[in-house]
Image 1 (spheres, rainbow, N blue to C red):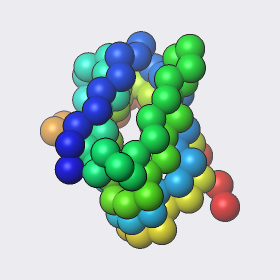
Image 2 (cartoon, rainbow, N blue to C red):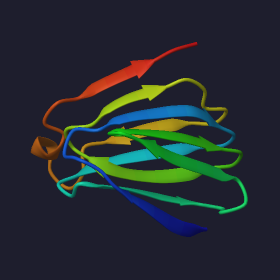
Image 3 (spheres, rainbow, N blue to C red):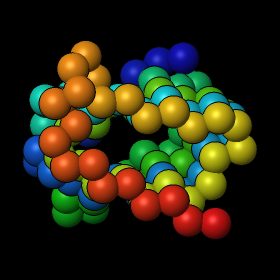
Image 4 (cartoon, rainbow, N blue to C red):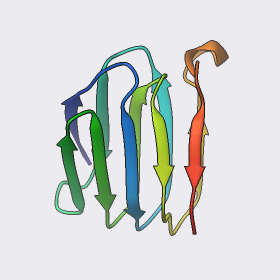
Length: 98
């Protein structure tokens, strides 16, 4: 696994098209999206203040606590954590679609 980062605002839109394995999402107070995954399996793209992500294997994502998340497909377990303290996830907006 290696890390890739993208600078964002404190409230970006995160669109997760597909994760082929397990997904772990954690909120933090940095205006950065950081993804830990196999670099050969990861597609990461920024368009304006939206980040599109697709990963053929498992991945871990750190994102700003004000982010909105749209998860389309996760083949394994999907886990969302607020960060170290519950107040880190200030505006939990998570959309799960099938």
